[in-house]
Amino acid sequence: MIVDDPTAHRSRWHWRTLDNAAGGLALDLGLYAVSATFAAITAVTSTLLPHRAWGAVAAVGYLLATLTVIVQLLLRRRSPTSRLTGLPARWAVTGLAWATTTLLPLAWQSIDRAGGRTDRAQEEVLVVEQAGSRLLEHGTPYLGRDAIAALPPGEQLMGYTPYQPGMAMFGLPRALLDTWWTDSRVWFAVGTALALALAVAALRRTPATAGQATTAATHRRDAALLRGVQAATVLPICALTLATGGDDLPVLALCLLALAFAAADRPGRAGLAVGLAGALKLFAWPVALVLIVWGLTRRAGTRVAVGAIGLPIAALLPALLVDRDALTENVLRFPLGHGLVTSPAQSPFPGYLIASALPAGRLIAAGLLVAVGVAIAVRLARRPPRTAVATALICGYGLLAAIALMPSTRFGYLLYPLALLTWAPALHRPGDTPTAAAADEGSGRTTSA
Image 1 (cartoon, rainbow, N blue to C red):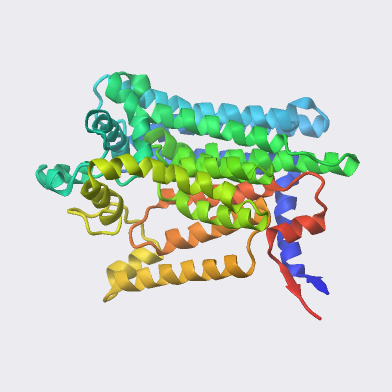
Image 2 (spheres, helix red, strand yellow; image 1 turned 180 degrees about the vertical axis):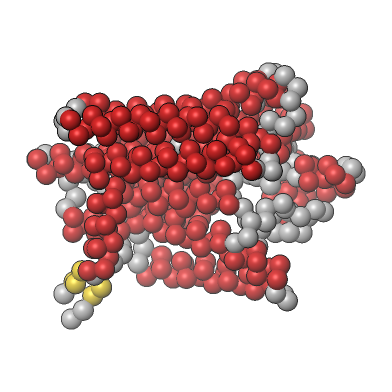
């Protein structure tokens, strides 16, 4: 007999109660108000000039969104059914918030940078654009070890391109034309917006059975979808990243698109989407592996793998043929800490603290990371994810553990697990019963005789 875990049910109930309070507006208010505070503090205290510039603009945008939600809450008290307080209105406020807290500071910094300001972009923007120039001129985005060693010591870090070859595509516009709208962040934003729009469309087209209960379930799914989009756009860790650096956001958005296709029972498209993400950055590869396992449970593992594995390999082949040693130096040696210089990614997570404070700490941190990987592999073998919801949860928690234990990491990487875990509720199919939904999540259930 299957017995529900009451603790898990209470946890889900408390979250849904909070998320649904005042029709979702209460949590909207908290999100925008806390974000406004974060942006204001960033504008005053950050030691990174692009971050300070973002905070000065974003704080105003978040404040406008906060005031708008306060007005919505007051209107709701007078007229609970007002269209100005419903889900479409909340989508409109989210769009306004993203425009004012991400797109506006992004455009502002890009224009300032094109005008000669050198403090309006993080280093990854320059790295991606240089990779685009090398790809156009030499057929590979990577410099070899000897070429990097020949650079002045202060420039050797910028000589590394620790991304997959596909990331250089975002640097091609600047290689062709030097103006503000060829800034790689502009194209990161375009790619992110396109992938998220396709993901929303895929989930909204997910078929459902007819009936009043399904209508309510569809509304819950759409509300969860809004929350997932907020996590990938207006959450400060995402807004700040896209406006000042941005390379992680299209990778994240493509992973969310892959999960949306999985929820819509489109395994081939899911493989293509996560394969595109994997052609940009290694962070997408664990998501691809879990999606392949999901595909195997539906006898569609090959269709997922064709795109999930084929596209990254296709992106690697030209760079491999042009200069294999340069590819190895940038994509493997540097991220593993064996480059000519070390990565500046040193946020004080457990893996970094262990690696820096204990004897043989790097080996200990690596061992813990491998142990987590083995545990996840065992979980996938014994209980493979059969739904997109379970797939998103495994990816989210797995990446959270990996980021915590990596010897070289940064706070910004948390955008991956936060967005994936927030995206999971939106992947429920309308018409699923609460019991089926709980089973999909693969959590909070025990078996007894």
